[in-house]
Length: 335
Image 1 (cartoon, rainbow, N blue to C red):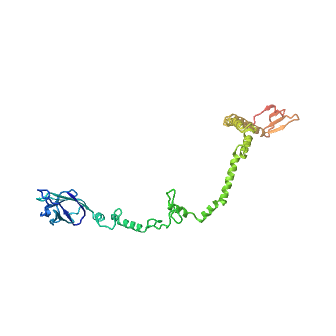
Image 2: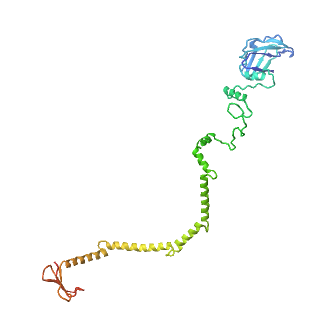
Image 3: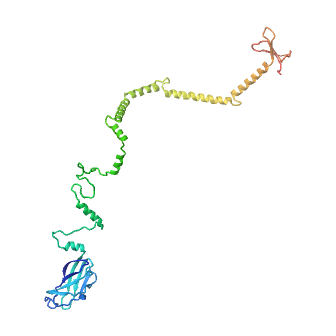
């Protein structure tokens, strides 16, 4: 048993097999054997043995070694290839080979001018176009610009003329561009207003000054603090009723009394109430006076006596001798 070497997949090849030794003395080379197609069996990657596909018989070369021809079918499976021969009169022979893909075989076995293995990238993730693009980029490599294919400046990054570097990361150029496009001439004027000594800057300075002054006014003993103290004294402690709160309480009590009187007055004015009855009595008296005044009144003598007559009648209805208190001497019914 021995390793016969590497074979290229799907490729016809001649291999040297042996040595074939006499099975009696174990040392004499067997040079006259007939090794037909059926005598030579192959196992691909440990699978079942079968006669080789190439129908050419193996021919003796020298010292019990034979030349065996294999065709593309015999080498069509990458991996291990085991060849065995059990021929009458000779000891069994086994040869092991390693079948490589054509690219791998060419890279490993093909003669080269240097000692480096030939590794040729034909595809990236099975994409040959990507490999071609990578080749073009590498062919045009620049120390300052790196791989070609992008319009990069011929200067080191973060230096004059080079690409800027974001130290914090997360630089969204599209967002920055959108913000820059919003900077119009009018907005630039507003920005100018904000520089030190600009219009808006001066306004802000004045606001800050006023704010600082206002803070000073509010401190204990400050201008506004003193005004509030004076206002508190004038309203709370120096009012006529000792303080406004006491005045309000007193006013509330008086208001409650007025409300009670008003409620009582409302009860007096209802039909049958105290004031209503008085008004009714006054009305009756007025009606009585109207009846009296509707009659004729004569003063009959110098003593002030008063005599009332009904219409043009000569018969007196009422005679009084004292006008002041209307003392009645006789009374008649008014008609």
